Image 1 (tube, one colour):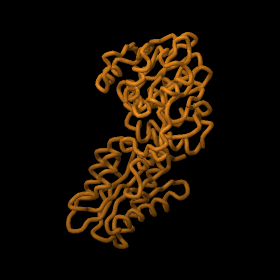
Image 2 (tube, one colour; image 1 turned 90 degrees about the horizontal axis):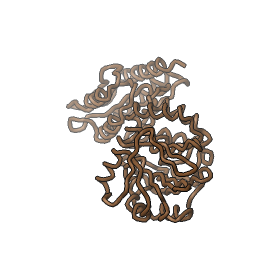
Image 3 (tube, rainbow, N blue to C red; image 1 turned 180 degrees about the horizontal axis):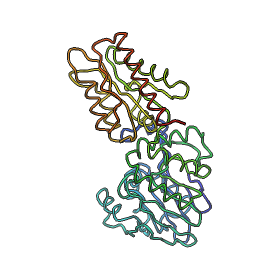
Image 4 (cartoon, rainbow, N blue to C red; image 1 turned 120 degrees about the vertical axis):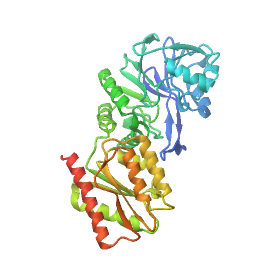
Length: 399
C-alpha cells in the first residue's frame, strides 16, 4: 500500500500494529516505519523499514515504479528500524546509489555487507537534483544517533525529519488531520520523553533549523505526517525539549506492607491541599505502571517524590528499574525528595536519594524515612512534604 503525500511523493512504509516494546519503550499503540518515494527523472527512496518488512516496502515501491529503475536511496539514520531493509533494497535496485553522511556510512558498514553498494557521501549544504525536485541535506547529529540527518525538498517545502517529530503510533490515517488530535499529541509527547529527552541541546538546534525552513509538511520516520498542525507541533517541541515545567507534581513509589504506600498517599494529599485546582498531582505505584508512562509524566513535571521501602538493605527492584530508566533520560529542571519506610535496617530511601542526586534533582528536604508503620505524626510530616512539592510547582510556574 502506498499513499500520496503531495503529487510525486508517496509514503511506502510499513504499519506495525503489533509491536509493543521498543527497547524498553512500551508502544501500546504500535508504530510505523516510514519510507518515502520521490518520483522524478531520477527517482529517490528516502529511508527504509525494519528488515522483516523489506518485502512490503519493495511491494509498495513496485506499485508506483519498477524498483530496478530507482536511482537514489537516502539513508537519514542507520538505526536498524530504518536501515534494516537496505540489503534487500540495494539488491532489488541495482542501479541505485545510497546517499548518506560519512558517519552513517561507517555505521552501515558495521551492520551490513556494503562491499557492493554504491555510495554518495553528503554533508550539510549539499544538494542532489532529481529533475523537477532537489534534495537538500541537513546533518542533525544526536537528534537520536550521531549520524542523524534530515532531507529537505524546497520545491514542496517538505522535510523528511528522520526520528524528530515522530510518534510510535500505528494508524490507518497517514496525516495529522486524519487521526484523533488528543491521542496524536500524547504520543508525540511520549516519543520526546522516551527517545529524545536526553538530547535536548541537539534537538533544540534542529527545531531552530526547521523553523528557518518554514516547512509546510514534515515527514518523520515514525507515525503520521504533519501538514495541518506543523506550527503547534514545533511550539510544543520547544517546550518539551527543555523539559519546561508545568504545575504538576508526581509521586512515585513501591511498597511491601503498605507503609511506603501510606506515605505516598499522604504526600499526595498534602500537595493537593496546598496546590488546589491549579495543581496537577499524580500518584504512581511503579509496579502498576511503566517506565514509559513515568518518563512522559516527568517530562514537564515541576516537582516529584520517589519512595521505596528497604528490602535486603537496598531499594525495591522495581523502583531501581524505574529510576535507572529516568536517570538515563536525564529529565532537567526537577526538584523533589526521596522517602520510604524501613524496619531493622536502613538503605532503601537513602539509595533513592542517591539516584536523585545522580539525576541532579534539586533536593527540597532531607530524605523522609519512617520506621515500620507510619504514625499519625509521621503521616502529617508526609503531608507537609507534599505541600513543599506543591509550593515548588507553583513557584516555578506562577501563571
